[in-house]
Length: 478
Image (cartoon, rainbow, N blue to C red; front, top):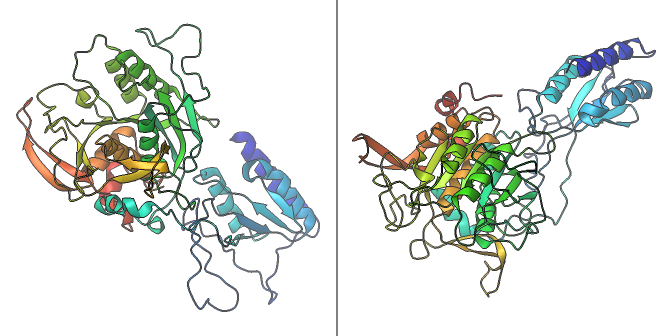
């Protein structure tokens, strides 16, 4: 940071000393006010509200298919000044000169870029404006299968994209069978094949979490990933709950089940994952469980480490119609501050007879009706045959394990909003549990206390200032 600031300070001094360095002028000869408005949002800003001499006759277009952040044009007094500016900001902004103007390319949620844009906007030697966007005609067109999932989105009060304040998307781990890596609706899938670990968490001198070419994809893991993070507005398939930076597919050696040592190794890999810029996974989805007595402490040790290292774990409650407060089901019964155990419900918030329950152990519910109770979801999958519109690269998903995926996606969505970007894993768990509807109450068998289990409700993201939810994470603002 020190070297960057020094370079910026040096650049500023050079710019002031350059001959002919005067503030650019507007058409009437006056110095125009800078149009950069930092209060709009730190990364993806609202469309500029200056359109020349007259106000627009209608609202500016909504570029719903444009997923990249807004870029900025910095106008200078002359080409020499612009060249110096482009050179000094080449690393931070990928700055490019265009005559006396310099294009600053922004990254969502980059606070250092935000600070520099604010500083330049206050300097009368420059005029900082948003670069206009031109939408490509005939592209995108929404997600043609999304209508199949509208009932789910309505049930959890999914916010309109315009209600969000976007920041950086987060990475999500899917601990399951291999996720399909060539699916047209899944971007940036990284596949990891974990190695088993000793009790101390090591696996010899080798890489414990090698990245590899994915084997034949597993339908269950692919559908979980699709429900969490299928691309929005790309003209194919359906939309996932959240924009996701990377889906980290971590194989738990599933052949319909997973051994406890494999599950523990996979969870360690979710904890240790870092992308090219050093960013970790924020939430791991585990749509599986076991009521058998554990032979080792491997799973509980891995879950404790996840808590220590700020990884949120979302686990499905299961679908045997059993009370998992009276019996242990791992990892659902961990009851750790970073573990959310999710029960499946109908779209109306009512209980499903096949879903496990347990007041004091189940934390939250999410709607995932079976085919006989409100239809099924249409999600990304391995290739399937059929005449239905939800076939080919897509398939119906009527499994209760989808409930965990809905909550995993919700956590990723909330973290991608700048108002909640600084929430810890424990805080995110509390926030999602307190943002609820359709609550059902009952008593815990284990401790005799009364609890409520409620349906996930994301309506707070549509509020102009969701103060109660932000208070859960402190200020909630980065």
